[in-house]
Length: 164
Length: 164
Image (cartoon, rainbow over all chains, first blue to last red; front, side, top):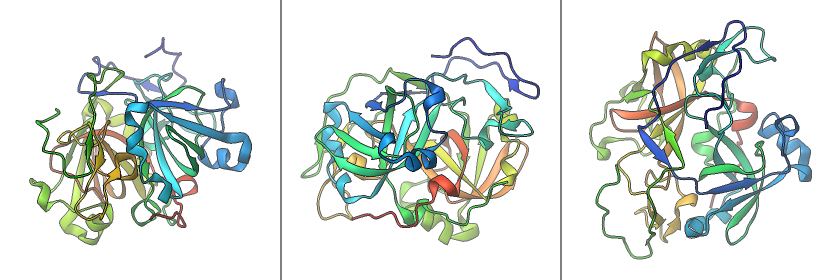
């Protein structure tokens, strides 16, 4: 869904795009979280983790895919990939309230992006038959699930990565 | 593209799936790498980094999206998300050669998965007008680009994450 766009803020740039038809996503489940409104969501996975039990989420997998969970119990953390279907996909420069200057979408983790895939490194709390209890996702209740991947510290953990 | 499936190995499970129509991806560019055959690709981003200059890759962005790069130069590392369009999407249990037992797809970083999105934390070497020179992707030359995100050590670097 691409909703009616909001008015761009100063410095924002919106581009014309044809329908996205290069590849297709099949939702593999839904994420159940405590949050029904954006303003209630944690800002990011770190804030979710800081909220502790208040931020537990259930990653519910379509039963057809449930065998795909075999072996995840050995990992302490998983990447949860989800589809942020409420955002504009054409807003290439964005002016988030917390930044002094507009910034390109590829320098932001904004949910509004050309392909609205978000990812969060979540702590795995419990594996059930067709769901995962996790801590560290920040999305609205009912958000479509796109993928689950094991977290590998050897490739994914770059403690000295620098940001502006 | 979902190619003719290979014969499942012992312990592998393939499921029946309808066409994927829940959401659509628009490729935003292509990744140019030195590798034209799978057997030449590094096994993962860590191996790519170990190869040094031999593994430099150019993330080429469709010029329509080029403004989205403004600000990426401040980050040392970026997540590169790409579409692994050569793999089967229905192989839920897989038996990779390096594992003693078959494992669920969500416990593997295999490119064969229900939604074949791969991600690599790559070191940003240089920002050009419509491309990024990076080190740390492991994909074939010409792989479709899905997203670029800044790497945030505060949420993404979990040095003590455990794997089996």
